[in-house]
Length: 84
Image (cartoon, rainbow, N blue to C red; front, side, top):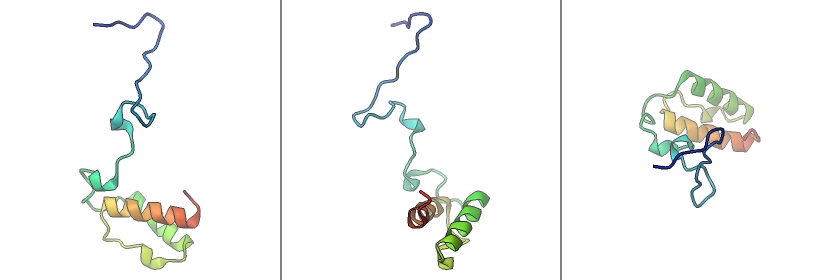
């Protein structure tokens, strides 16, 4: 068993892409979310409505989207409106 010397921090290993080894902290694809099929959150609905208004695309807001689809639509609208 290896020990870290007192006063030193253990440096995380990296994956081949240079990202931290702790993949649990990475952003997951919405299609892989375990709760992605649940209704979108209130925050998602509010942000999606705002972005759809800014993009002058009221049809982009659909109150029946699930969390995963809302996230994907938000990402697309952020790119379209220059917010992301």
